[in-house]
Amino acid sequence: MTIDMNDLLSSILSGLSKIDYVRPKDIPNIDLYIDQVTTFMEAQLKSTKRYEDDKILTKTMINNYTKNNLLPPPEKKKYSKEHVLLLIFIYYFKNILSIKDIETLLSPLTEKFFHSDSDFNLTSVYEEVCGFEKKRINMLQENIKEMYQSSLDSFGEIKEGDREFLQLFLFICTLSFDVYVKKQMIEKMIDSLPEPEKKK
Image (cartoon, rainbow, N blue to C red; front, top):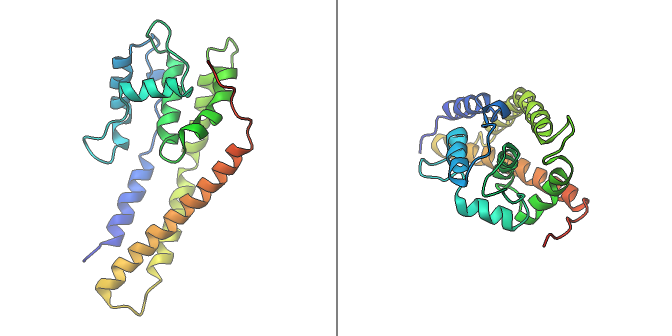
């Protein structure tokens, strides 16, 4: 097995540098029917798909999110810009958090900022979060380069073909451990939040 670790790292770092977020100005200012929401999300988030036939969002998913109190119900079968913003948050959270955890996390957001008359609303929260995350990309790239270099400095006594795989395995384990620790931290913080009141 031959693995070009430098090519792999370049690809990872290049992917990180291209990470962007859906701009609120790109979300239509008119309310959308469910099919329009899934089409919009598919177009905006297609670069995040691992496989071509992966689905970003389906009607069933949206209905389940509403049923599980992650998403406020649509008004007259139409979804607002704020519904779309919540769906973007859900899309990213669902990869690491349970439905219950997402509900706990989003409930205060929807109660205080969904359809708020205040100047500070859900769009303001979304822009602040995404802007903060975008600024952290360089730091993440540096952190990944450091992990990668550490993995290359390991298994020096192993023959070349096996060494490449073991270095890759170590790199993946290190990244996985990082995700695991952060997931534990996230769950602990969510557990400290009050449980959302059950809606009828």
